[in-house]
Image (tube, rainbow, N blue to C red; front, top):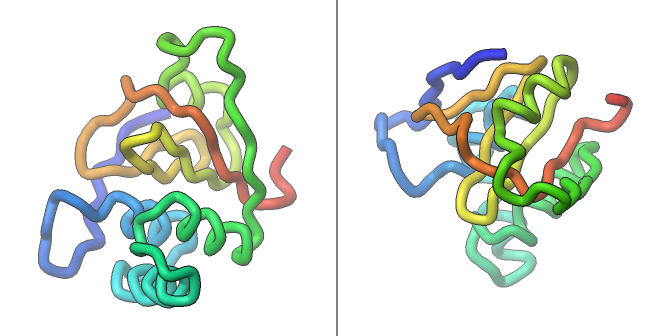
Length: 128
């Protein structure tokens, strides 16, 4: 389990596109491809591409399943904890203000977001 710096943004931008980055990494595509998919979903739903319902619809159509994280310890279960508990598979975590890709226990981001507290996750179907 480790933080992996990744910035697929072709211009090297470091803010405002965590949804696009997480979708790109989790689906194994370029930033441009992920952005195009999300803007298409956003257009159809008449919402911005980084809206939860937009990226959620895209992940669902790409074979991901949504799961809630129990609220028994709302401030103590971190991204690092999630990665430790999920060493295999591809996931997209949502914190309410940030979105992070997790693959085989590593979390991919432009900053070490391991202390963030996820409230939900999407997992690629077939992963236990």
